[in-house]
Image (cartoon, rainbow, N blue to C red; front, side, top):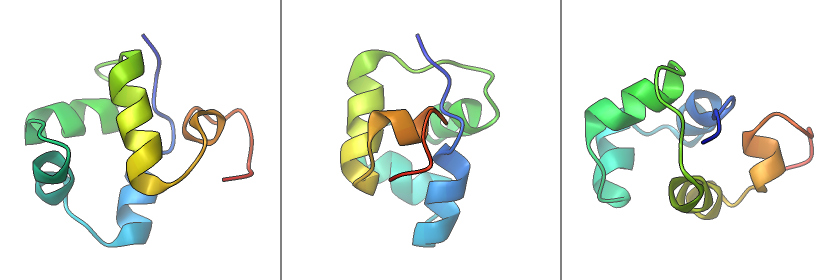
Length: 68
């Protein structure tokens, strides 16, 4: 399980709500909220889904690089 340090930033840059992101990825809005506040850690399947959705690397999502 891993923390998604940049999820909220990416979502806001794209101008979408937690609900829109949740619907697009077939998730629950509460889960998105918990990922953003780091109350919940993502599994690898979820991590890949976020990286693909925002067209960024997993390392960028995790805060390991500044290169998207």
